[in-house]
Length: 97
Image (tube, rainbow, N blue to C red):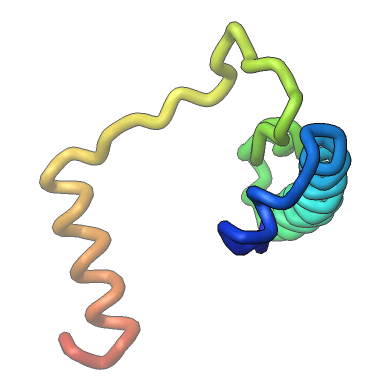
């Protein structure tokens, strides 16, 4: 919240509560902007078969309940897939013929 220890100890509980509410409000507004922009950019650049990404799937904001179900489970890559990705990136960077 940007308070020094001296400022914190001089505050009343009511002052601290109001400051905390303001901090949460600003943090939430930045989070909404970030997740909307991220989802927009993802959806613009996604492949044809890739499902759309909802902004709420990007980031859980302060005060939002945790989701009980997980829509997209992230699969771990196999060593072969990692090797292929490394080779593709190295070719694109001109490190491999």
